[in-house]
Image (cartoon, rainbow, N blue to C red; front, side):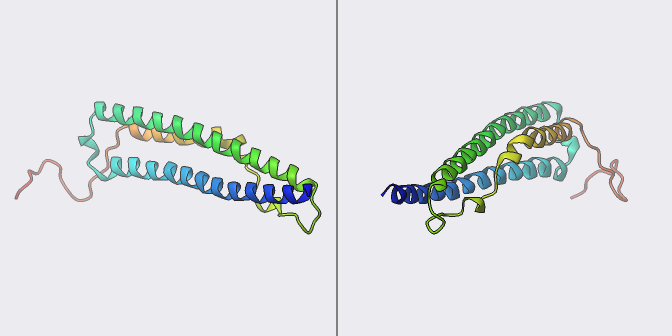
Length: 149
């Protein structure tokens, strides 16, 4: 009976792990989408039109986003590790015929170790691109020519 309870609990934990992996994926997708949007806007529009006040506001918003996203990722991966450890404890007492393979899921431990570096590099590059104005060279055009309708 105890093994049956463990098998049912293990199945529920594996369902939670699957749902939680989707949350982790969505958090990374949000991270990538925000970077594409911010830097795409900075380089698609005329960079001379983005004044320092706008860049400062964008930098503050970007810093806030990075802080929140970093903490969300730490919480996500810590919770994933706890679920995996709990699944391994429950699976330990089960015979092989009732075991649901815990090792199917990758261990998130390496991500927790390097998350500070991933976000640190992204924040340095992102902050630099936001704060340092870029002046792209226009090909074959003179900026002194007035615009005509």
